Image (cartoon, rainbow over all chains, first blue to last red; front, side, top):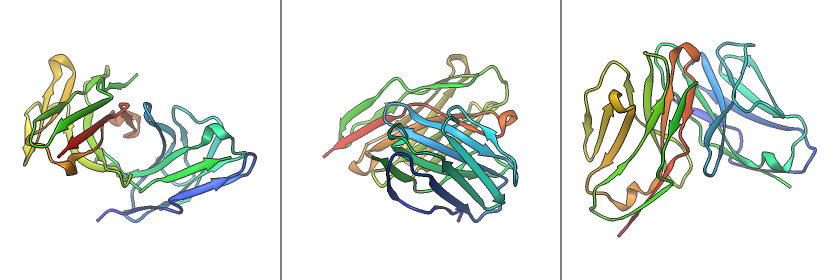
Length: 112
Length: 115
């Protein structure tokens, strides 16, 4: 069974704090993704990575950065959290041999 | 650019009714993949189906069926004899392999099944 885990289910941070969201997958997938989910907007891609140390911007990268030092781990960083970054964050991974992605349980981040 | 439209924001049905969730997609690529995901109240996205652009055969899996029509760029999802456990948010998504298998999602349809 593919497993994608995220470090926290719920997180509350203050405006201006640096926030780290961690994602780990155990299926040796090449691709990893960070999405943000907001009501009425579906899931929007923030960043993705197709290999270690490689990253590509998605549709809404502003205010975020990512790190992929190991194949199984993909971190999303909010350099200075703002209230408009309050959202559900979903990590996913996929293999280049097949399309489609497996998702983690999500992290609900609240920035106050 | 790729785009997925789920025009139905929310649907309410009574148990045992059939319900169809609509999905319309846009892409200029000839090779693409279409997906449906279910997101129950627990929040985790559950993969339901993947269909590639060269396979227009409809698919049935138990009470679930999918109708893929390239002529109308649609990939609709029907639940037969709905159950309360089907209550969830359903997302349609599109992937073009050339772009790293990124999934482009629709806004989602909230399905409420009442007993």
